[in-house]
Length: 404
Image (cartoon, rainbow, N blue to C red; front, side):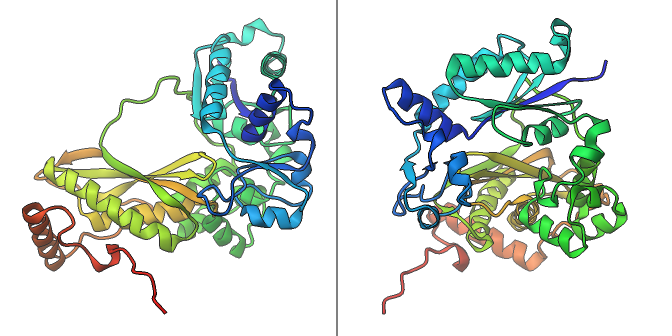
């Protein structure tokens, strides 16, 4: 049986949910019908646009840009701060409603999920009819709208739901890829971050179709394993498995919410260095080495993305973990502000186990030499004796303000 996968995405969730709540409490103006944004003042860490109305979009206002920029584009802009507690409650009620249709739901963020429609498709004349009942039911019951993308796998369903908005249903079946997806700019391909897009444009690959028809060897030469994944996505190749239950946590990892949103790789690199030191130390205490490294990004609007790769050989060295995480970050980062970063390791093996070398597409940093290993061991012993932080790399020391 051919899978039928839905991707259900709330239209401008934060702004829509705020508008619904205000109207319920007697507001006379619907934020969705005027130039409006959800954001915060420039002194807070939420000083960027988290969501925008269609009218605000017409002024050229973009999600992720500083609030000050948005007001320069539209001086009569209306702004409200985010209310994440309310958003979580709206999200919970939405998912409860969707599970009345099927339990095969994989929630991937506060405002979007995948639904495996395959087992219940017989109830409707077509998947579009089923999607219409779900979409209209959400609008009538809760007062906000969603887009639903329909296809045979999660990737294409996700791409379809990003077509024309709001309150729409779109299909993107494999036979429709050439017409509906290939003409789109390369930056609209799922997982095509800012860095990858720049590389592809230098290769004169400007549309998704250009990438789909490009020589895979050329793409992997420039973008390694991530390039292969993007090439597969451009050709509509993706998984159709909806994970209705979260995988059992395996491996060792750590993440941190940043005190201020990071907007440059220079701000990101020392965070990964601290995380890698922590994860590497825990691996060593457990007597383990990691064969797989995963990097996690949570954006300013709470969208989460992760990317992983198998190491050339298992390691528990912080330098390897840090450099790998930074490489993964650069491959998928969209350029938007980042509020959380994480490193997780898996495919653990005993530290003393014999190593079996393999060749993978992505070049992974080599193990530190003996000199650096001895230095790291000495630092670990001093920190264990005198307390964590007694000895640290100069690059990790807090910067002192310049006194002029």
